[in-house]
Amino acid sequence: MKIQRNLITAAVLSTLLAACATQGGGYYGSAPPPSQQQPQPEGEQAGMSKTSKGAWIGAAVGVAAGLLSGDDATERRQRALVGAGVGALAGGAIGNYQDRQERALRERMAGTGVGVVRQGDNITLSMPGNVTFAFNDASVQSQFYPVLDDVARTLTEYNQTVVEVAGHTDNLGSDAYNQDLSVRRANSVAAYLASHGVMQQRLITVGAGELHPIASNATDEGRAQNRRVEITLVPVKG
Image 1 (cartoon, rainbow, N blue to C red):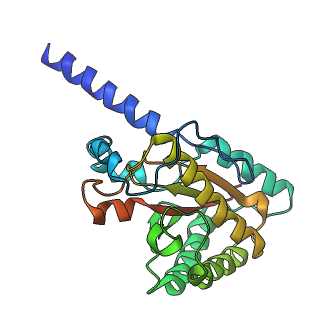
Image 2: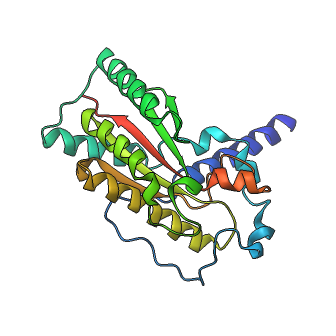
């Protein structure tokens, strides 16, 4: 009976994690989902009752980082890029290509507050919301333009990747408002990159809302880390 209970517990946790990982997928240029609730600003104290909600997710940081749009969306975009003339990578060329792109990004993002994380062949840039956006706003702050300019320059130099832009929020405010805000922020970053030379065919946007915290939502510092945009670069594979 003890073994059976452990198996049931593991199955439930696996189902919950899978449900979180598949929320909020979409393509760049799609309209954000309409909010059916009254918008609440980031940090509104009425949302504090939700501090414990999703706290267990914070312990599973691996779920929060990296690609959220799913393999199917990425593969469709890869096929479209190959059809548009973007060369596919194969074998050892993939790792070498991403090694060079990672080095370029680490050099250009040094001192900017943007984190660079490598997971296998994928590279993720984590952009803190307090640096990228004004409080409770989805417009990229002008002082962050030079950083995004460097990101766009790197992406155009290394154009054999699919680019997923994912927006994330803390858990304060309504679920619907946080989801909408995360989509609008992802779309803002994607639109900026597209306007600076990144092919729109490469871009996928995802709004993850509050579902994937990387820190505790019980503190101001943790909530600041959770308000972010992540850009994940996936190589186009042959």
